[in-house]
Image 1 (spheres, one colour):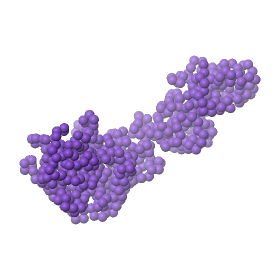
Image 2 (cartoon, rainbow, N blue to C red; image 1 turned 180 degrees about the vertical axis):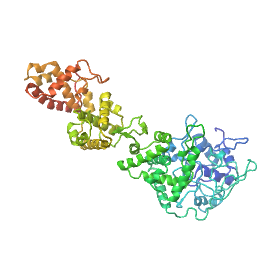
Image 3 (tube, one colour; image 1 turned 60 degrees about the vertical axis):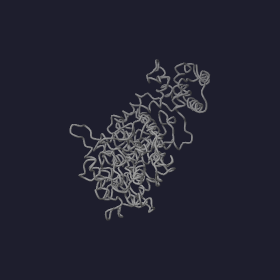
Image 4 (cartoon, rainbow, N blue to C red; image 1 turned 180 degrees about the horizontal axis):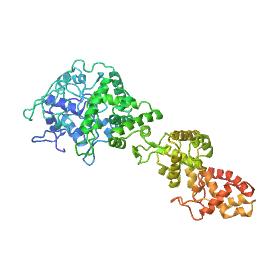
Length: 622
């Protein structure tokens, strides 16, 4: 790189959607040079001597870095736009694996098997060309997008792509020494671009190597003829192609499609129960997976095998089968149906290869809807890291919620508890007055999970709730609730979430808790509230007890979590908290006299206090 290049005496105009590989093959054929020689002249490859053939780095399929692109454009009489059009990186915004690979700033090359294929798939009809003189002489285009793992068919000629020469029956790029490059046997010259470049079996030594050179445009009789499954494959290919077009990108579709494809491979053949395939497609996929498992099995003495089992198939028919089944499994986006399908698929995948299953979940990006379908729930909540098959990578909001976490109180309102949780509460095996608070607190924690994806501990912090109390409530409910009753809890919380979303006047309880963190009833307010009451009710412990209950009502919080009783940082009770707790309990249980009068004044006062917190900053108290 960096050396001056001389323009070639002749060049070629690129064909529409042509790959860099195809252009090099056609140009080499026109100039009667080997592809390796063209690569060295144009600075695509550096000179190699001895027994090592010149190689075209596979990452050049993505596109050329600026210096190399300038040299190549100058040598081939092309514009920079024409050179850029050879690269697969034009799809990086729509096909996520492409955005994660290639030459990095540090000079290292990042790889992803699902980003692009080095194997040369092809459509025989495309290679024949359009009949123009230049294409009669040098063949049609080796299309750029044939290197994408998700491209398995030619929609122009309504047929699946090929990947093997029909004469030597070897896959293109079968040579072991060529697997790191994008051109097969680049030192071979004189081979037509539409002919096979495989080395014939039994041919040894570079000096006496014989090449197949059979036309790839020649297909066996009946090959790729109309089949019962071809139309469904072509519909899927058109569906995929539309998502690769500029302006119609849908990277989320590909993230989910590739994630499910890898789970299908791990779970095979269990996935056929949910998404059956035509026999020829099923056989092709079964053959690919069987061979991949054989090659990736751990060798004697090794703990783990290679990751090759999850690489995309080279065979376009196997690819069509894999992606068709994956697309079918994703077709029903109803949350409950998708969850049932994905949980079954995940169980089968983990049962066959738990290590690869967990690595796939951690490394493959997915949409929130698929993450929700795959995530593990343990008795009402996201499963913790100790639970089998649980991973933080799937911890997303467990529903698409239109309420914010700040609008969730520490305890759901008692009226909602009575309306939505009455049936669930009867299923608890222990009858206790504490059950109501446990359920109301757990429901609030679940609402935070729904809106943020937080764990129970994280949800407790969001709600300014002592973690120990949050965990205790969950632990008690899990002890008291039969396994088959947890769906009742989830459906009840879902009903509360829907109720919140319908409510046109939701309150910001997080703001209220923040404003009232150091608050007590102002002295003048306390004087006004107790003016006509007996002297004993005006004492300081009643003042603080009233403040605690006003805080609890305004924030819909648990009064024992009041900052006047517990340290908000440590969650521990403050000194003298027992006196405040007793005063608050005495007031909340009042039945007559001045105490009852004070309790009756509490509700309207706390409601006004909460409303004030929503619209203005309360003055700081000394």
